Image 1 (cartoon, chains in turn cyan, purple):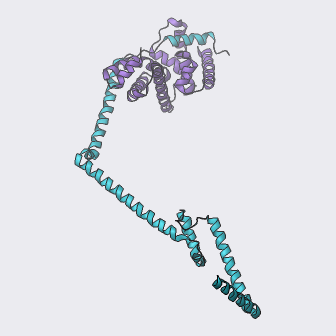
Image 2 (cartoon, rainbow over the protein chains, first blue to last red):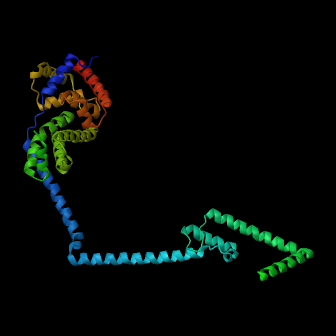
Length: 181
Length: 181
């Protein structure tokens, strides 16, 4: 069936021609203005409530006091941050300093310091070196390995008297060379 | 004629200028609302609500052409809301006598000056089986004689969707016309 049949077009023409007539434009106008005024009134009530609750912020001395209080709070905050940063820096400098002595620290202590290093994530202070966590783990492993090997070596020397004598002799010779130098 | 100057004057909050805008806007807003809803009181409510929305959002309007599209969009959306609410109340089904009366009125041709009630009855009966979207596209395209671009701007549908909805609506209404008129 063709939609654009004669009957269909006739019906459409009639409907197009019969424009709905708005009989009471004034009524609509009045109602709209009334609704707008009501909305405006409710806005006024809302602004009154807001003024009542927060109007005190417009009082001069209250405003100035609040500004002063906020400045004091900001200064306290900055001061506290400074102290915290200082403490973190001092902790960082204590963390791991590789200068011979600290390598003798027990391994669990080193691990604790490593933890601190991970949490802090900051650079070490001067006279120290910065290494990654992975490198630190490798270092700890090699230190442990060296300690084990050192103990084994000591045992070997203790068990073999000839070797012990030889080592003692070598050590005495080394000491002499150092003294000469 | 609605021009941007009048809209700008209304933005300042002048209710007298807004009265002029209400007078110019109401007829075409009412025309679409009435043809979509088929009920004078509901159409008037939609027009009123639309005009209140316009007052609240006047600042967003940038051109007179945009204003008209915007009005139609608000009207159509408010009509959708009304139609959704109305779903609970089933539409009345016309008897043979009613169809015969309508047929007689239409056979008078374009000179037949239909009253609002008659126009509403014919549109309601013919579009009874259409979805709100199909009804909107049919009214805007075939009765209000708008272009596809204008309808797209109002309904937010793509041109393909408009064509599909319009094709279905025309086919359906054509069947009704052939069967009853």
